[in-house]
Length: 295
Ligand SMILES: [Fe+2]
Ligand SMILES: [Fe+2]
Image 1 (cartoon, helix red, strand yellow):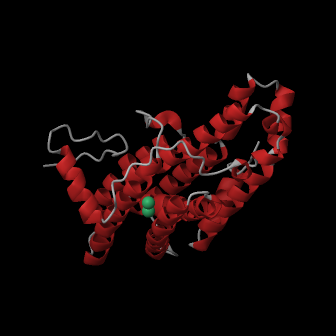
Image 2 (cartoon, protein in one colour):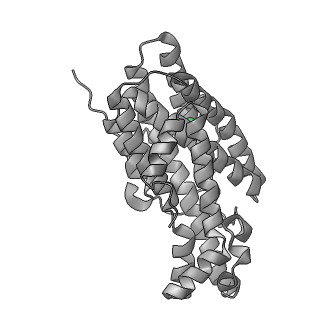
């Protein structure tokens, strides 16, 4: 029997009367409560998105400002939901493609960790979860990596680069979060993500890699860096509430929220992660190809 590797981000719900029972067993096994949070609370405020410095934003009516923050909060949570759900088949692929008992064991625990992360975040998601993965440019790339890349390239791209970046991103989310419960959820998640990243670093640092692996790493990392620089949710949400931007207004807005500086910081983080495992050559390659260019 041959298994087809497919991502699990759109895995459907179990459709049977026994679903509730399965959910209870899952909550008990993962020690997560299934309490549903129903308030339309704002978890991250203007300053988190750089919006408090924007006159275009602060001049908007209160209800529009609230809607922008609510949408940005919820979209961010949905993005995490998809990434954590991706961990199901990621763990499975890596268990099956590992040979050693240590790696198989670690990837089994890895999968369970990602399940717990998703369950910890789910109570805070109030918007309808999108039914396609195109809603953020990172998600189709996650699918591509899982379905096409070999084990070594997958480990580097997902665990070293993305989970390394994820630690920085989740720590920012935790530190700026207005809800104690959600803050605690991120603290729990971060403990595991440090292990997932550490494991990726351990498995790839200064390792000899085949030409094919190097090619896959260069190609996928380039795409991920571009996707991380291309995120435009903040600008799109404010632009929609404002009723459209002229070219000049868009430039002014990006300047107001220090978009260039935010992206520069992101790029520096990504470069540091690649260098950490002895991949300075990769940074040079991507630099030469203009992958880190912000504009
Ligand atoms: Fe996770
Ligand atoms: Fe993880």
